[in-house]
Length: 281
Image (tube, rainbow, N blue to C red; front, side, top):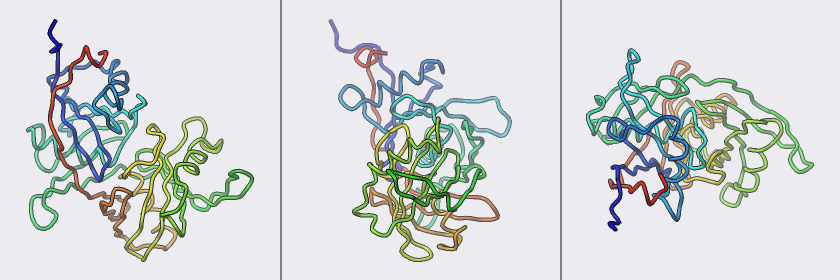
């Protein structure tokens, strides 16, 4: 019996260390009802490709959109938006001829404008305009393990808590992140949690605990956006800031006329074929 069962091509991409499997659904034609199951099996460490998430790119008839995506975390939960993945989507869509360098695509959070930069020192990086932030709230007091904790909140496509700390390198991001993520204040949906150390008015260090991954990840684009939005609101930073992530990459966040822009790297790491029978699909 041949080991080469039915297969489909896939791409593996990463944005600041946040890695994703991408399927061109113009060819694969995976039914939307099956996509969550695909995410769990494809993103599995030992038995799949292994990634933080999976998204599908496909054509759309919606006016003013070049294409749309369906994004899923590795646990199969559907996410409205992912900043790092949005840059990967924009770069790949342009590379495979699905969209021009500057384009708009559909997400569950709304339309996202993406621009693959062509010239200068930032050539190859991707700048995206996120959906308008919602629910901004600063200085929220919650109780964690019997002690008060001041947190801040903003929804930049997905919900984010931001906590400012002084020694981020030694902070228990996974432990405290999980406690805030599952805190009753954010039930039942939960929240992503960002821990930031402000170095000056244009520089921060950032570590993020991601809902759906249920662990610290190398980077989170929407988390960086929420962190800069809140830091600027509190007077800690100016309208532009560079945030160095756990993976060592820098995400640049611009606040312009009420809009939030995210700029950073997006890299194609490899292309391959996945064998559906081996993955249980």
